[in-house]
Length: 142
Image (cartoon, rainbow, N blue to C red; front, top):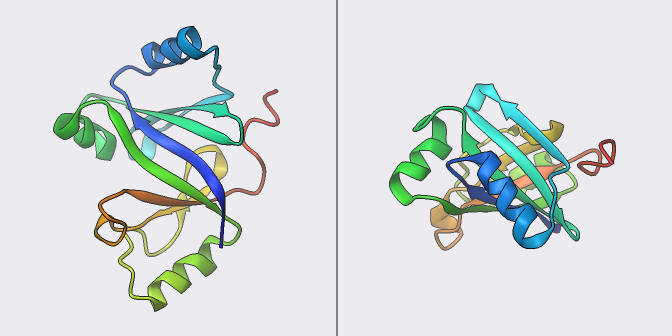
């Protein structure tokens, strides 16, 4: 069951420049910045109310899915992520509905979350991620 929008993913070429833009224009600050070397991405999480902005930069130009996205599309909106309480149950439910899944099993996401992406062809060409978190992001950083 969907609980809320967890985050909006935005692909950027330069994470520091993007953070500075959000700081200067909107007065927003990241609560966490991390590198996920296994998938070649640096992430900054910026809270806006109950939703996070997730800025995504490849660790090296052109590396990984974010690098490919930037090559093909340039900077901008990448995906929307919905919070779920039990990602295993949601993936099972979607599989029973014959919904195509990019990730048939949950994998590790930012801030110790568990994530899975759906195939865009099932969501009107909108890349959609499911996220399960045990704690609210950034609580320990504040």
